[in-house]
Image 1 (tube, rainbow, N blue to C red):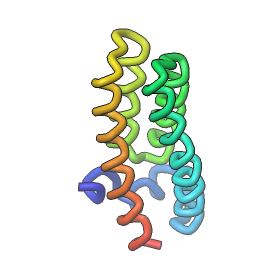
Image 2: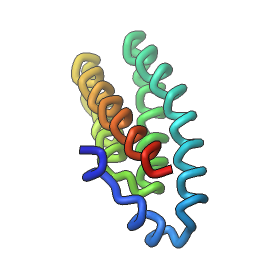
Image 3: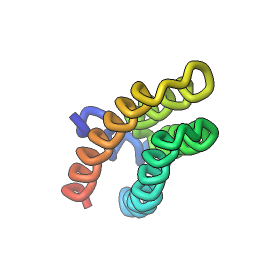
Length: 113
């Protein structure tokens, strides 16, 4: 599924960067995302809608810029939920979806590195 979510060669071509540079950037994003996910879980548990919105907004942009659209789309859905009609249970489902795709993406990237 993750390999369907993004194409490293296509992302590099669109961004006009070498695969090595792309992977370096993505692995930095992964490190940040691991921290963001911890904060996102805590914010959702605490009902801290502003933090859920801020973190999901950052994830949406980060993964859109990296051309990893499935992750960006899930983060966008979470961001909209936080802005318009927040529900902690729905947010938890979206966070779990994000994490599942994120884990699959990490495997694909590690195999590509």
